[in-house]
Image (cartoon, rainbow, N blue to C red; front, side):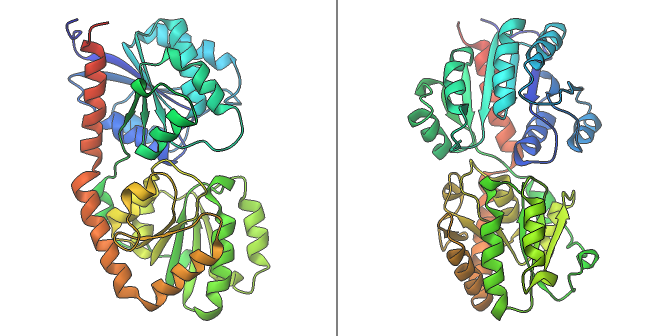
Length: 373
């Protein structure tokens, strides 16, 4: 079949547009598509967010469907109605609820090709894997962000291996490499302080309590270190309450969501990711691009970016004592951690730029539209 007349209408669907890893990835991919080839529209299921401005500034039409819950089945018909008007030849979805709603709406709207994005190895017992498997027949391809996620999706999710491909996350290298350090004094952090940084959703998956426990122990012999949590989430109130009761409470800070992540990373001493599971976390790639030392749990995706002791430090999940020991090593072996950060920065510059990642998405879309049915 010949390639259709350009620009080709293409749709992207995601659960929301708050600045999480998957949401930022969507923005990076869509805004880098060749606009002579593609005419993209983005659909957000549950509401707006700061990233809408990025999309609209790039001239990407963005539709906010505004349902109160991602489980509201009316979203399927709302999305199908929008798709029937746009008539895209391909629909790319990101995140579980958008994957599920997009498949069903795409079927109702008669979309010829559907591609889903699988961002994590979903280890919660919540029925997601079953629903993914039951609707997999509606999907041409499942794009996984790491080989670990792909293996999990095939072995545990029971998705057909023939439909699973791997395209990793990317990073806007120049943005993070060239950022200027942010003044952290508004949070009560002194200019000469060393800062342990957490960036992400305050959610059980990310295990922020493990980092809080590790820092409380570490802080007893490291009075010049502060801890900064950047993000929102269901555990925030609980973390705040617990932090206030600690002896190092004046050195624990919460910023909420913050747009200037590159500048925060340049101001920090290290990034800690204590997650219990992941896919390929953008925040680790961003820290690597910043030249910021990384301490992370040994979770899916991270092990494909970092070899322990070469590009960063890996610790076991659910073990605050190992995070504490890694922080002790950072404090006493600073030069070694800087060397690892420099090696990590070189790696992402060569292999994980968003331009190269967007090109890979472009190619799989083009291949789907030109292959024989």
